[in-house]
Image (cartoon, rainbow over all chains, first blue to last red; front, side, top):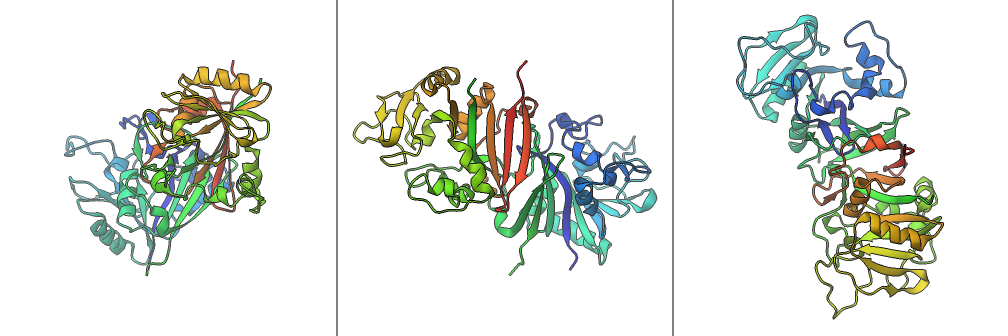
Length: 218
Length: 218
C-alpha cells in the first residue's frame, strides 16, 4: 500500500506553521522567511527553481526525501494562494510557483470553491476539490497509482489528515523561534503520540528534525 | 554577577508545561507523569529523595546541572501546591516534597496570599512573597549571596520572568507528546529568540534538550 507522507513541514517552537496576515506579498504572514531559512539554504530547495547551488549537509539530505516516490500532492487552499471565498475570474491565479511548479505531479487543492483543472508546465496539474480528507485522498491515490501521496500543507490541511488518521509518515522541522501568532499545527491532536513512533535529531543549523511513523494498525 | 537560571523545565511538543486540572492527586493535572518520564529515570531525580539508583547517561548529565551553584529558588504558587485563594489555616501545607525538600536553599513562593516563612529540614526555607518578579528576584538574590538564583517554575512564573527579561540561562526539555490543554510556556513571548543564543540536542531517550543563553546586554 502506498504511503501518505508529509515532508519538510516546518513549525516554530510555539507550534505555528504559518504566521498571521497572509497576503500576496507574505505567503507566511508575519513569519516572513523565518520559518524556512533552514530549507532555503539547501540544494533541495534551490534546485526546485533553477540550476541549483545550496548546501549538501544533513538538512539537505533529510529535505531531499520529499519528492522521491511521490505521485500526487494534496494541499490546502491557503498553501495555493491567499484568496478567500469565490475565485476572482478576472485574474487567473495558479499558485506562487510560476509557470513550472516544482511538484511535477497532479496536485489536489482542497477548496469550497472548485474551478476547472489547470495543466502547468513540467507535469504539474492543479485539481480543485471540495470534499472531506478521505475523498480527496481517494482521488489523489487514484492519480498516484503505485506511488505515494504527499500532504503538502498548510497546517489546517495537515491537521485535518492527522485527525482523520490518514498519515503514515510525517517529517516535522522545529525551528527555535517564537512566532506568537498564526496557525498552529498541534491543536486538537491530544494524544497523537500514541499512534506514532517518533524520532528526533538536531542538525548543526539549529533546527530539530522529527519523524512520525504510524504504528501498524491492528 | 550571579545568574538567573531555569533547569529541566519540560514541555510537550505543543508547548504545555503542565496539564489541565491540577489537584492534590495530580500535580501536573491530566498530563500525569508523561512530561517527566525522562527525568524520573535519571540518577539526578532519584537521588533527590533517597539513596539513588537511576541512569547516568546524557539525560542525567544534563539534568544534574540544576542545583550546582544555586543559592535560592523562586517558584510560583502552583508549583508549591494546588490551592487557590487564601490558605486554609486548618491544614498546614508545605509543598509536595515531604519534610526534607530537595532544594536545600531559601525558596521564594510567589503568591497573593503571604503567610509566615517555614523552615524545613535540610536547609530549605519557604518564604511567601506577594510582589512583581523584579522585587522577588531582588529578595532571592540577597538570600543567594554570590550564588545563582533558580526560577523553578511553573510555566506562568517562568513566562513572567522571561517577559521581564530577567533570565540568563534556560534549559527546556521538549517531550514528543501532544497534551492538547494545560498551561503553555511560550504565550506572549513572540520574538524571544532575538535575545538568546539557542542550542538543541536530542537524547537517546527521545527528548530534545534546548539551552537558551541570554546574549550580552548592550
